[in-house]
Amino acid sequence: MWKVILVEDEKPILGLHARLLETYGPFEIVGRFESPFEALQEIPRLTVDALLLDIEMPRMTGLQLAQSLVESGIDVPVIFTTAHQQYAVQAFRVQALDYLLKPMTPNTVKQLDERLQKYYGKKEKPALKKELDVQLYGEASVKKSGQLVKWPTRITEELFYYFLLHENKLCLKWRIIDDLWPNIEESRALPNLYNTIYRMRQLFMELDVPIAIERINDGYIMNANNSVILQPKERSDALLLESKGYLWAYQLETN
Image (cartoon, rainbow, N blue to C red):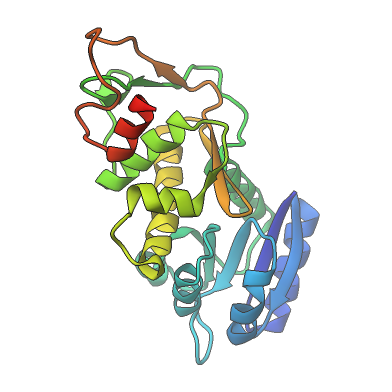
């Protein structure tokens, strides 16, 4: 059951979308707001899996609301609803998982469920094996079907290795920041962490691998779901992530 929040300034549309989600999909509406300003105050207090935001709202647009929430540390997927397709490009600049044309339909609800399953790594495993081949020692690399994975940023790659070496263990966000962003102020480091995790989840969706990153209280746990194959050392004296030069990896090796 997905816990979602709706923000829509048109009350009839708000009611319609709430009924469709609860009737045709595994959705629980934990908050519905006609005012984006009220939503901005209340959303951080609620436990939620996704936010459905109307783009066109007076005084504060859905895009502006999403940007404010991201900056305040909200790192759940954002889905925009709009009557106009031209907002799509702007939407994806604000950490959006998807955008939907309104009014929604039962088929839209089904598609949204599937999208969230892929995002959170909860979709049933496909018949074909879809795995990452990972070399952790010496010349470190991550490959899929023999091709090197193209990371959106260098820090996304580093955070993947970090989570992999702490798989199924709770990584507190403050410890992650100390290890990966040691010289950045906290006010900047937190949004960097949230955005990097968002990029990782998006990449796993594109690669179609069932790796899940779950947020628990003040930290994260990654479960590779048996989709990572660790390769043997190419040299007996090779060091952990030797080619990457990560200080935290060197400390792990020497501890």
